[in-house]
Image (cartoon, rainbow, N blue to C red):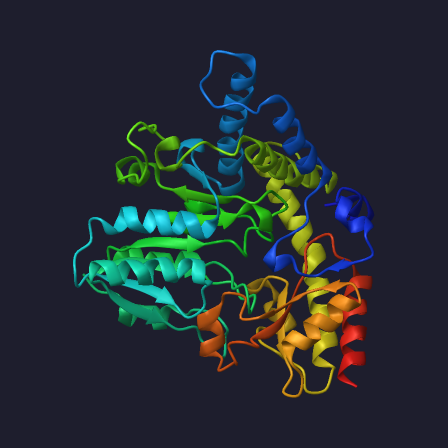
Length: 410
């Protein structure tokens, strides 16, 4: 692996020419120039519906197919037929939850966690209300900051229909051992639905190795346009009832994609995958697009996580400031570079506003991790001050926010 080309990487992102420090990446990353150009090009040359007998429509068809293939490469799917692309992760989860729930009966059980974003909690709670299902809550361990297998085991039984869990927390940054948790649920006969929104910007997803049945992520969190992406096992997707109009496609992948696709955003989706493949090549990887994407993630992690440790160490040196998550340098591999903090004497909302006034972009509040905030005993309105790194951030930006917070705390 070659040295991480941070200057070259930053040149790919037009937004980074601004003086702002984009440390709001868990909420959405900036996009490279090739994504912007792909969206623009598709609007200019492929602004047509699919399936037409003319060139613009054929270009739209090609973009549609390429987007599904690109996401199959990104997630390790068997083919683009296992990929469903939609408006957002939350919308896709609401939609698929309804399809799954049609076959469930009152008294059947679903497991949701105290660690998840609302996008992987509320759809199942609403479904439970409608279908008379029993909801079982899976906590995360306050010492390890992760969901532990011993806490899952007592919740599983013959009535368990689904386990919904996340790959990485959007508030604490902790990474769960999804493969181990999935194996337990599958042994009990349950389906497993994984929210990988916060993991996908930082680590290579391999749906085959995880063993789950569904996995969702958000393109705008991994340098792409505002779209949600769902992977599902082909046998399940092919048989699952589709909530769509009567004349919609019945075959995969379009079976669960409602309405006319956003062709220009699909083009941006392809470009986001190709950007990661480009980064892999720049950092010394070759081979298939999937192999180059894997190389990009390896290089980005090797660059990001020392920055994250510097950020954690700098924040912990500020009197009274408490990190809500893993801080041990020996456990960096169990977290993504999302760092949330609280201070007993300072409003997180006020701190975020003050930092924004200095050109430092962060978020405050529960960040839709409502159950996490409750589990930690935090004020729901105040939540945390959340700082999130991406591979285009720099050591100078880490120093900038730590110094700014030191000044605001005085």
